[in-house]
Every structure is written in C-alpha cells, then in structure tokens.
Length: 93
Image (tube, rainbow, N blue to C red):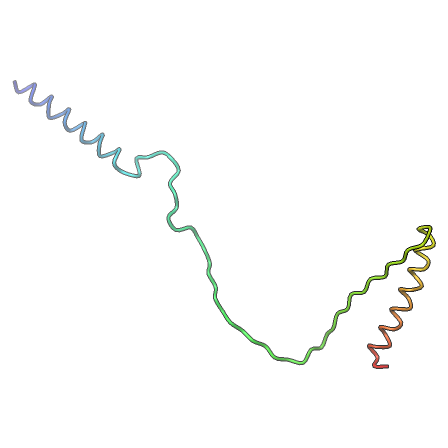
C-alpha cells in the first residue's frame, strides 16, 4: 500500500511539473511577439528667418526638327541664348 501511495504521489508530482512547464511562456518554442518594438519618436517645431543667399533655376530647351542632328544644332543655339539671358538677369541688367 505504501508503494502505491508513493507511486501515486510521484505521478501526481510529475503531472504537476509537466503542466507547470506547459503553462509557462518560456516553455514554448515558437517565436514570441515583441510587445514593444524599438522606436524613436520625435516631435518639434522650428522657424528660421534669414535673407536668401542662393537661387536655383532649372530650364529646359526642346527643339523639333526633321533630323536629330538639326534638332541638336538648334537646341545648342537656343540653350546658349537662354544661358546668356539668364546671366544678364543674374547680373541685374
């Protein structure tokens, strides 16, 4: 009888240990979800007032002629003219 009681206690102890291991999250072997991923949050407001010291201008020249060579030649003439006029404007003339 003592042997059956000891065997019952041992089985109950093993069963309790097995259930306790299953109930623990560390006992799981799957990938655990990170509840708080690493993030950086920045909030701010700023203002700067200054006199501009730079300007930018993008210009496009498009020329259509019967041949590509004729269009490139005319395009070069128009580009040179436009650059000269832009330089005059920059110089204040």
